[in-house]
Amino acid sequence: NHDFKNIHLFSSKKISSQEFDFKKNLNHKISDKFIIKISNYAKYLRDNKPKANNDLWGVISKIVNYKEFLNTVCDAKENKEKFIELILNCGKENLTYGFGTNRRTYQELFKKKIFREKEKYYFLDYLLSLSEYYKLTKVHNPEQGGWIIENENFNYLIKKIFKQKNILPFKTANYYYGYKFEKNFLFLKDLKGLYAAERLSETYKNNNLSEIIEIGGGLGYTCHYVKQLFDCRYTMYDLPHTSLLAAIYLMISQGVDNVNLENEKPNKKNKIFIKPFWKIFDNKSKSKILWLNEDS
Image 1 (cartoon, helix red, strand yellow):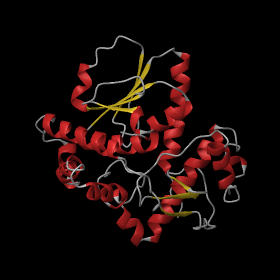
Image 2 (image 1 turned 90 degrees about the vertical axis):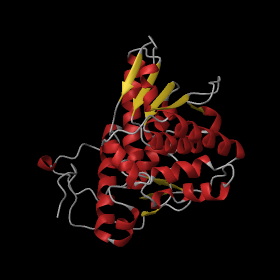
Image 3 (image 1 turned 180 degrees about the vertical axis):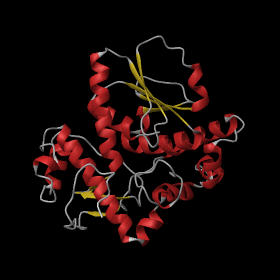
Image 4 (image 1 turned 45 degrees about the vertical axis):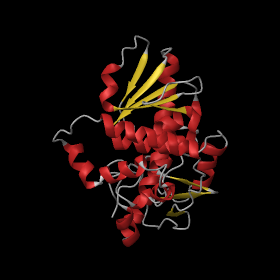
């Protein structure tokens, strides 16, 4: 029953379910400043979006009912409770269809144990890969033994990676299925985002760059972990509803004042810039930029 997409071989021994669950603890205060900022950005997107083309993302926008989501955020100042309820329950909806943390929807994971089991193995596989990168574990090679890896202390590995390096997890939406670690939850995208950030850090510093620009950054995992590792200007271009979600979760994770949205004037505190895709050709910068597309 081994899923050969994974590179680490697990024996038939079952992984404990106690460490895994659906996240249900996003209890962050949403300030009036946050509401005004995100509502104004949503209105800017609604008023300036080019006419939709008949492409893949046009179809997906209809599936996720993007228009209703956009209108809810536009009206956030008038109906704060509805907006907050939407954000708190985002993982239950299909708003992150195509770039969420899990390979299955909340409904599928909730109903079928086999899907939850696969999510566990995917997460642990990435955790072991990241632990090998940080030299916390040896590289597991079935030809040389050491391939039954359930005896690894996964909490110890997470502590060494996140706690001892003072790395704060991304404030992911509720109702994703992930690994419980103390008061936090970790997901596969956290591990991928952190690894990408480490590699970007090397490239950025070795080439004396001035900015990172990501095309199709999803909710902003890579951006969040880059900001945990080193200081730089970070710009994201994306589809309207995706950039709106990234704005929400990066402001929750990084702070309202650290994020600049396209309809706003930049200030000295801004280090993260979120823009819709149609602004990408306005970039005339001649400085040394690292352009990035990953997992998109």
